Image (cartoon, rainbow, N blue to C red; front, side, top):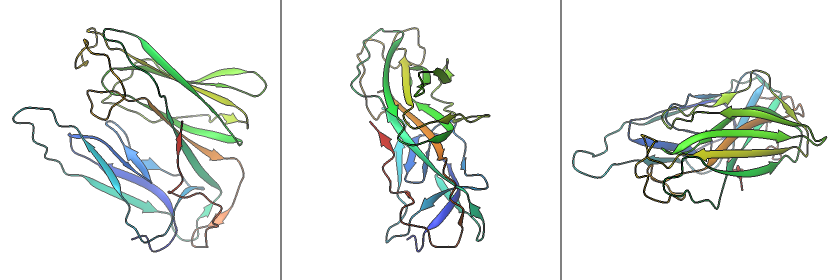
Amino acid sequence: MIPEDRWIESVEYRNGPAVHHIISAVGGLVPGAEPHYYPEGYGRVMRAGPRQVVFNMHFNKEPGPGTALCTNIQAGIRFKDQGEVIKYVTGGNQLRIRGWEIPAGESSYSASMEYTFEEDVELMSFMPHMHLRGKAAQYEVTYPDGRHETLLHVPIYDFNWQHTYEFAARPILPEGSVLRFTLWWDNSEENRYNPDPTKDITWGLPTHAEMSQGYMNFRRLREVNFVVGDPIPESVAGDQENNEAN
């Protein structure tokens, strides 16, 4: 049960080797990921309600004897201290590329999608997500004045080290900026991690299938100055908001 609205400071998961990913309304974990931390002055709301925080655990069990799952998962949420001032409310979106099929033997198949920002934001981080055929990822932006910029290029993607890439100098994206998200996969026999280069591959939950997500976090530019412990306005989006962009 969540007895009252709270401001989140950090979320951490500790998982066993059989966990493919953990997803919840307050964040998630993939192999190689670090805990998520909201620095001083930044925050995200967890709304009160007659429910427990639900964690979606995705396990990956290989077929055959001796592959039974044995894991110990821990999850922790730390909240902001009373009296701390929240200047900026953070947000995020899941970018999902749809409608692709990777041909058997294809060494550099790519697919893209675009997302238009409906408000001024400051970008905080990106994290691309694929499976064992993942090869590379790129985030680009076209500003309203026509300028074009590559924000993140991951030339060598590794499923076992899925990093969140945080900006040292955070770019400001005005309303109307268009983000283009592109992924590449290697479904050839040259990819030593490829489970089967003879098969055409589509989206699927198992690790031997593929995924096509890209996560981003940002802060809204408008300063709010909420005090932790005071009532949180209903206009502030909480952990129930739908953060998937199609």
